Amino acid sequence: DFQKDAPAERNVRFGVREHGMGSIANGMKLHSPGIIPYCATFFIFSDYMRCAMRIAALSQAGTIFVMTHDSIGVGEDGPTHQPIEHVASFRAMPGMDMCRPADGNETAGCYKQAVENSMNGAPTTLALSRQVVPNLPGTSMEGAMKGAYVVQGVAAGQACDVILIGTGTELELACKAGAELEAKGKKVRVVSMPCWESFERQTAAYQDSVLPAAMRSKTVSIEAGTTFGWAKYAAKSIGHDDFGASAPAPILYKEFGITVDAMVAAAMSCA
Image (cartoon, rainbow, N blue to C red; front, side, top):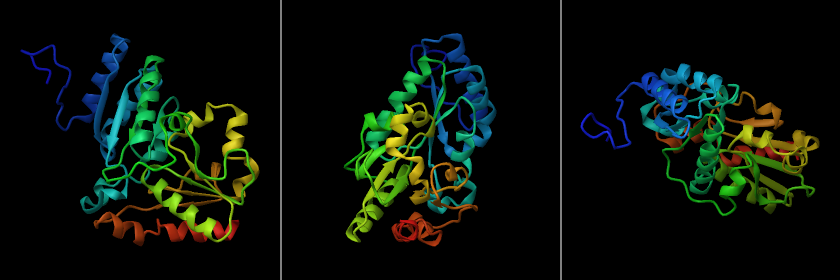
């Protein structure tokens, strides 16, 4: 740890001082552009750091904000600790990349992108899960860096009956829903979308090959947070537009309808 008698070390323990932590990280980046500072806390506590995060975007300070415990999956800590509107709010912030990777492969890709963004004066927020998640078969660093890409089913640019979009821990649910729909005879494309901003920087041709505008009426998204904003990409969105509750994550997902069955039903209604 960095201390007055150990200035060569790199970790600074701020305690519960999110605003000060984010502000100091911004100052380090603006003072010494070659430094790539990152700071970390629970995602819900970004509320205490929002001013610093917004200043990072406004000042083009390439700070990396690593946020954990990203959804109602926090579980028994209850609604005070469960982010709902936070992902959407940072997607709405100009100049901020908001990344919600699904697994280790995507986390590596999003972090690589965040480092590259930092060197170009752009901040990144990463929302990471506290849940245990597998590395899914179709995920990759390279795909994650494009913001959205096909992880299962019908390839980009090919005709399909329905598109399923998932982020974070819910990508696994989208993949399972896709498999069930395929068993029902549907041609399904499952898309991981860890970062809207990265996706929107891709060419129009790439964007249309993954998420064609003509297929929006047959696209379903799933994310364990507010559905606000998803109408941009999907006709139907599965999420939760209210505060959470105190219960184990599997119970909350079932009670709030963030399930494979719900996604299959939504897809069947528009396919």
